[in-house]
Length: 78
Image (spheres, one colour):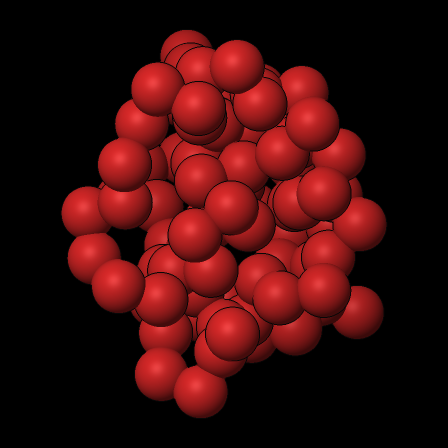
């Protein structure tokens, strides 16, 4: 059974064209780069310690190296 979807993982529409990743934890489709971004900069506490996130982080490492976070990490995270 999927956990409740946190606000940081919600999508306005059903699966969009750029949605190439299905989150097993929250049962939602969205772009894998979003998952990697959340994992890299810990912008969603509910996504912490996720194996899928670590995989997407490796997959998008080169792209993320050129990006910067838009907001600080979630409070209480390292």
